[in-house]
Length: 130
Image (tube, rainbow, N blue to C red; front, top):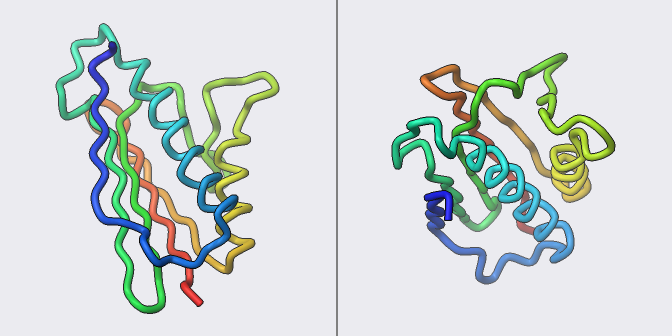
């Protein structure tokens, strides 16, 4: 409806990770991305800006999840934390839940915010495969 596209590459077949934690990570990444990209509607954003990418790469030891999307101004970084534009009781719990699920599984969570025509969010999650 708002012209949002989702591109998913790779797979997680054979990854023996906690299903609830993996769902928490993926669902919150996508929920945050969809909400952010939805706010670009009507702002003359190109198809590139309306694309959400989600990629899975794995080897014998690591599952690497990368996700990126664009957003309008209003989201910011403070004390090495993403501050949500939601406000209220929903403020920042998605990222908090992602981090908890990643750390509970011995993984690492990194992100970068690039100031371009619109803000570009890039997330990288590394989870050990035992």
